[in-house]
Image (cartoon, rainbow, N blue to C red; front, side):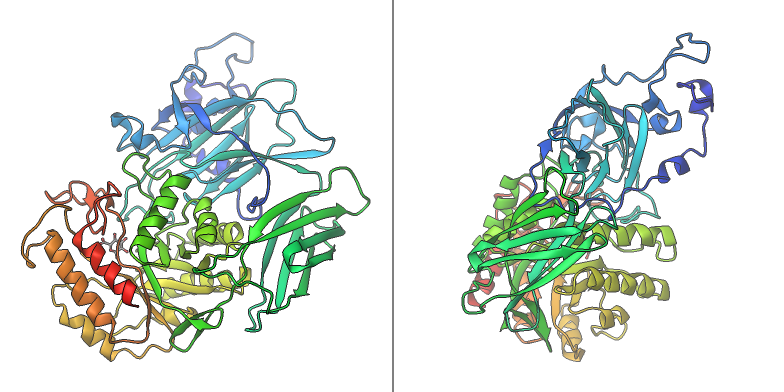
Length: 603
Ligand code: GCU
């Protein structure tokens, strides 16, 4: 197509256009960790229009060309400034009824002004999450595409942003499901679309702190803190001053080729270790002094907790002490907001967990909002975080692996300074094949490469033929997650005891899912499926069984709240998965909630 093509017929017939937008991939090598930085919000009402044929990218509407090569104006079909507005963050599915089931591309557009605040400044757009693929255009220029619907990404705009006029920002969010994506096209949750998390403008000096990772050295002595710092651009030298004033640490870290690290002694007696009962956070600051000086030394200020999580035989040790993970699973699903969440909703979830006497949450099946781990750090909740390598992923496809590994790297780089996060999960319920073993063991190695301090796990399948906990992947895991639905999908409850008795795991096991459905308010006998009484009786049998097996180091029953699910349309569920211990209203507790509350109280 000619450079000047607007949306002529040639444009809308353009078939193999998608490769064009894979040429600039926004991935974990970009600025991901913005914790401890001031940012400016680009949230608000953006113009929006559905784009089921992906014509904005196909015919390059983002160029906004209205005239042909002779200068004559030609008709255009896009109308960005006239389109209705929709809230960002927000999923389009819950904005209006006719968009509830929409899974295609959606075009977002807004304008914004940008004036540098300091002489040498670089500017980035930071997206906390966009489902599933997002292509970003600024002032008519394609500046990058991100794959992955639950992890953050940034795009630098320093060279394309205008300082003398309104900037025009267009984002295409493509929520189509695909067998090659992560997750693939078949899941057990609702496929929300759009710019459903916050969007920020981030300003940094020319040379800036691109990433940093601070943690207790996990050697069991609780006496040293390590800090790794990366600054923008290799070949850049300089120094940083790393400080934790309350621990009397203020040290220089020299940077060479863009990186540096320091290990600093702390007095184990004076260090207040982070734990659920005492979620102590310390002020941490990193100030950068680039080689050759220069205006605007970069500075990040954050709060971090220091703790150690390890396994010993079949036990999980937090700060050297055995801990039982009293948890529950949660989806990022809200009746009114879809996949969008807020600090209030997060705090409400943690309140419900604590009312159940819990100390741990499995954030299923994908990375939740960045604020969840920040708030869990403050509230003293332990977290399992997971990437959506869910069910039958295209394990043999190398691009699918790149996508999965990138999502894992983005999650770890985003949250590895959060003490509440103790487990990285590389997937859920994946059939044991050679391709799957290679794919997921590689992910496990990648997780350990990026973070030597946390446990790696996955929700594995039970070997139903041999009736034992057995999965070749467990060799690459620190903790074995087991999903089992005895008493629900498999009515023969006795199999659970048979499996647990036949299993001799050499590492801790977390029962990452168990449970059954119940319509809140529906009462009946203990054999009436979908009654609260049935669910309660099932939970009692499950927890009574678990008590007999010391290798079970934690539980995250499925699930805290009922959630939308586009395959559950019987009269008891009506488009929801009703295994929640609390109704989707996030208020009505079912009888089984109190079974877990009592069980966790006595643990
Ligand atoms: C599976 C799966 C969940 C699903 C649950 C169920 O174990 O991991 O995502 O919702 O079972 O069937 O309710």
